[in-house]
Image (tube, rainbow, N blue to C red; front, side, top):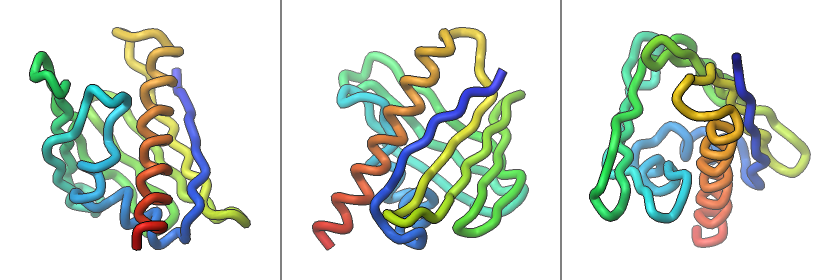
Length: 138
């Protein structure tokens, strides 16, 4: 089963792409809730290149690495990657008021569909807020 989440970002596609693919930015937005954070990220953005994000509870009680390999990269348009035996697709679509970012991923079996959808959606919403705040501050 696949799950799709999406958000709209009020920024040019060049800024959206940069924030999604730059480790310094990923560390700032990649969390589903305020009690989690990403402590490190690496990106080798090319087919066959690896990525990794270390996600941890802020209280130190738990953490995990989200890692995989890019399988297709079309700049400012599409990123596809594999993580474990699962796959994901990230689409960047120009819209009149910014960019629609859509992520479709293979579901896992540990958490319910609703839990997975909510978690990935929360991360995307954090991403949109990060990009829009960065624009206002810049």
